[in-house]
Image (cartoon, rainbow, N blue to C red; front, top):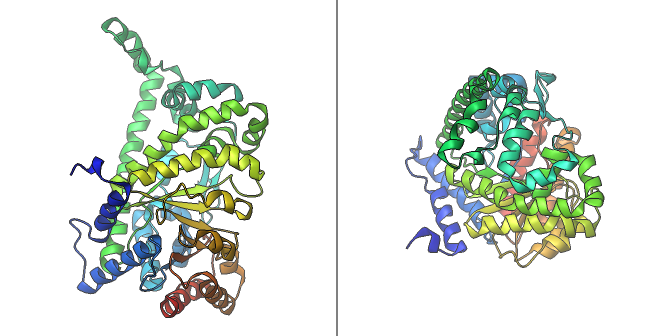
Length: 446
C-alpha cells in the first residue's frame, strides 16, 4: 500500500516500528540493544495510554550535562570533542530513559559567522558558563503583516533574515524571486546577485553552511554513540512552534504581539493561518529526517499569565490545534511542552477532536492531578518536577515529590516522569534523586 494511503494510526505505528528497530544501527553489546528496545517500548506504551513495564523518566536539559562534566557552555558550543565527552559522561552516570541530544546546545561558530542577533550565547553576550538568551525586538514592524501574509518565504529572505543576521544585511537588495517568469526577466532578477555586498553575504552563508554541516555530523556521532553504547533512545525527532509563538517570539516580540491582539486582530489571525502549513511542514520534515516520531512544540505565550481564557480560545488554540492535527495526520506525535501554568487552559486543550493516544503533553506549573482528571484515557502527560526544586531542594524532598507524583497520577499508564522546564542548573544529588527514584519507584508502581 502507498504510505500516503495509510491511516494516521497506521502511519504512527510504522514510525514507532522504525524508532524501535532503526535501520543500519549496530549496538555495542546485546544488552545495549535490549535496553534501547525496552526504553522505546516504555515510551510507546505510555503515549498509547497503556501501562508500561516501568514509568519512563528523563530530564529536559541543555547545559546541565556540560556543567556536570566540567565543560563550560561556551566550550560545548564550539568544541565538539568536549561536548561529546560531557554528554557521554552525563548519560553513563545518570542513565535517563531519553537522550539529551547534542543538537540542543547549538553551533556557536555558525552564529558568530552570521552575526546572529536574535540571541546572545555563551561568550557572546552572556558569560561562558551560562545558557543562551533570546533578544526580543520588533524584527517585523506592525505595518508588515500584509508582506508576511502575502509571501512568508519572501518576507523572511529579504526582510526578516537581514535584520537578525548582520552578515545577511545585503539581502535587502534582492528582488522577489517570483520575478523570474520569462526569459527577458531572468537577468534583471539576477542583477543584485552581482553586487559585491550580496556576493560577500553569500560567501558568509556558504561558510556558515559548511560549519552547520560539520556541527550536524558531530551531533549525529555523539547521539549515535550514546544510543549504541548505553541503549538510550532519542525521543525528540524535531521541533516546531505554535503560530502565535512564531509571531510573538520570532517576529514581533511579546509586548508588541500582545498589543497587536487589540490593535490589529484580523491581521494577527490571518498571519497565524498563513503560518499553520509552514509549522506542520517544519515538524514533519524534521521527523522524516531523524527517523524519530515525536516533534516538540515549546508553548511560550499561551500560559495563564499571558492572556485571558477567551483570548487563548481565539488567538492561540485554533491554529495550534491545526498544527497538532496536521502532524497527527502524518503519524507524528506532537510533544506539547506547556511552559508556565495551564490551569485555566485544561478544559480547552483537552479537545476530543484530537484522537486518543496521539499526543504527549508535558506541564511546567500545572497540577497534574487536575490534568489527570481531564486527560485519563485521552492523552499521555508528564512534567511537574520543578527546575527550581532540582537547584534548591534536598535529595529527600526530590524523592518525596517524585513518589507523590507517581502515586497521584502515574499508576494507570499514560504517564511519563519528567521535568516541567528545561534544566540548566541542578544539584548533582538532586538529579540522581529524580532519575533513580523515578526508575525504582516507577517500576514498583507501573
